Image 1 (tube, rainbow, N blue to C red):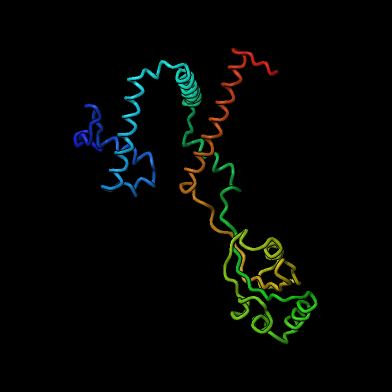
Image 2: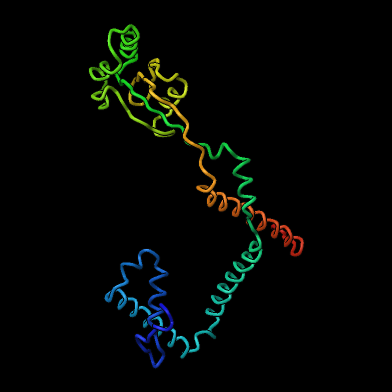
Length: 250
């Protein structure tokens, strides 16, 4: 909320609680905060803020911050915050330039190739012998692949002549995909065994997609290179610190 529009929504012993404090808690809740951004939800959050203020006042009145246990907790929190700050300082100067992003893209073409796409039909039966028998009949022209699929395939695709449509790498079981890779387009495979049974596969199409454009992966490359550089800077700083502060493992 804009400070110009901020307003006091409650007071605890004269100390104000502002509407912006409710907004901040909603923001801290992330996507879940949207369900509380209504009069009833904001009232619930206000009650939480009031409770926190009451506990804080109680702690201040009773000088709890002077208690040894609190001081120890405070030291741990401070040490953690200071450590995180030092790590942040160690990596904050890391930069990734546009030239570095483009260089990585150009030098790693394999990572940005378009995915391979297949289009295949199949006939699924229960035995290798029957699959071989059907393959022989198809090869001899006694029956078309599509008619054999419609009559004998145990896969629902049989009703459509065995047509499976287009699919990408990793979308079929490995044995099926490997057969599609090894075949010539337009041919029918020898029987292929998978967990589902025995397949005769007809490969209708196999093609590589267009190379992924630099603009579409620039952000991903940036994140990868930044993480890599930050890790290197982090480890370099550790190595320097070990010279300054010797480490002895017991």
